[in-house]
Image (cartoon, rainbow, N blue to C red; front, side, top):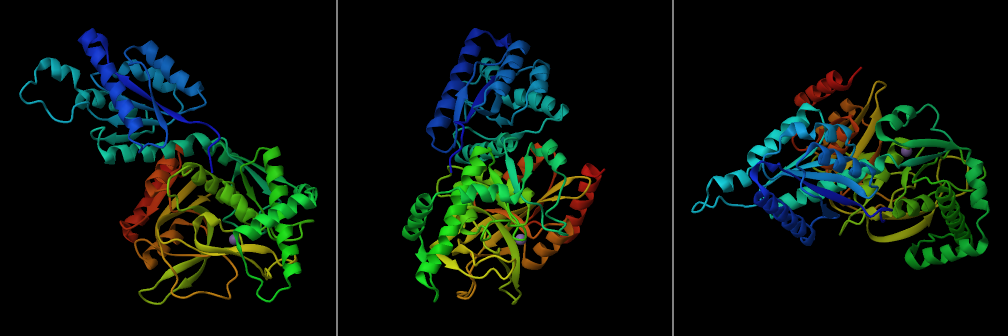
Length: 499
Ligand code: MN
């Protein structure tokens, strides 16, 4: 998927006029070289734009307000080459509303032992200028990322690149609009939540539509449009009839093609980027949207099942954060379904009734038609595949009544030992870190849901930073987790975020 905006990040160097014009010329030239080299490195997913050196209250305030207004500006990177008295930054920082990165670097890598004098020291003093600046940002309670090291270092560049993607998740969050088709599944707790509070915290608009309004948009899709998409499916995917009549099979597939087109037109027309459905409330739809939803997720729409709008929004955000990533392995809604409890082989089989995003697939993707064994509609067509191996994160955003908590579990995805020929759904399989028992115990203690927003491409650090920017609690379950300390994390969360 592609982002709708051509995002850029501004590079602002802090200084002052105490050291003379020659020093300021060097500061500007060094900043120009750093920005040029960062852009040339090919590591950063977005362009860095150099701004004039910030030396006065007025210019700092003006620059930050311009950054607020510029729709393409996704954040500001600040570095203090020399000392920059931090009171000059107060008004600008107070009014700034976008993601902030403090790049704590220095133009020269090594101390020039033979030539160093006091002029050099005064020009190259981020070791103390950046501390003055960091003090003010901390005093003002502003959330920011700090990256430390020389600007030519690959590790530093990768940290900046990673933060840029977090910043996209932050600035895009307030543009996420979730369409709820019908309501949440009756009596289910964990898919519920405070939609007003979600808009306050995350900026999400979450609206409900009667299912038959979208069913009408589906019915309005022409047969020729539908058949053209069916042809595309038959070109792209393996068709597994499994004894079904070929024409009857194709008619079932066509129902999903018509839903895909109808849903997408409805979402586009009304400007929604995420959608939820509910298998128990399908109105005039002939099948539960399966293949159709899988294809929409692949295009970048967020999705949550059974009315789970929090998961739909989180899937959308994680897809935005990984947009355009080279060698991306995929992002999807998943559901903890069944365990393998054999010692040494423990893991959780991830699936859903149908709706798993094919971006996480490895190997062939097939279309099957099978009974749903739930609800009262015809057998829905769906894409079936298994998923990639490697590390990923499963996240669950829950509403605890007094606040939201984001649970972030690092997981290791594996292949299942044997094929599962009778299971007609897409699957993934993982072992939660630090191990199956501790990971599951921590997840349950934290109140984590059975639906998750999962990604191979986004890191726990990125999601934790996103949560911090949203002002909500985040807890991590990973190889550093032990239950005794994890319970203290939850207690601390109650103290800091509980009401
Ligand atoms: Mn479910």
